[in-house]
Length: 228
Image 1 (tube, rainbow, N blue to C red):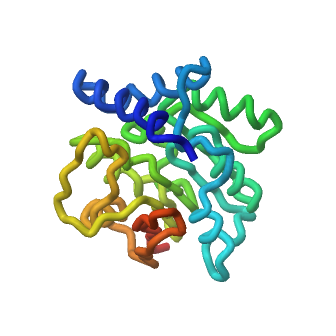
Image 2 (spheres, rainbow, N blue to C red):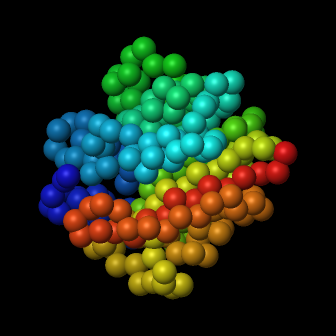
């Protein structure tokens, strides 16, 4: 786990970017600094998200068998979750806003079956609309602030195919309108924000639970499905 000092750099870059009117440009700056060895990406720990792993291995989950199915990983970073889903048999496309992250994933997994691409959630290729059996998003919207956060949440369900699922994993808050202090970025999703992510999809399961961190943190793990 990274120190508060290391997390502080991501928070500083985020605040500077938002103040300059560019709500997302800081992601590339952070990955570039990490590539140069002068900073770290706090969420780049080398492992797939444990809440994704638990979901995928649970009996009856749509993630239990990816054979013949397409998956899209939103904000894939260095590819840990994408590679996990590929190992479950999915044909995975994974994208990130930061080209340096995509280059890092391709370098980390030179023989990968995952298709890695630099792309923007708010401007996805038209061919991706309704094209994926599983769309998976974990913690990528939480660092966003303001209108771009709302737009990103509303865009998540677009690539889900008929009969497909959207899986959202995030820190949770029960507050309807929490104060979002830049010093505390990333900010958890509210119940209304989670509903916005699901959009017209049908709720299959929404879990709100405390994780096993010290101290424990409240999490969402929500699965939405598009009717066939």
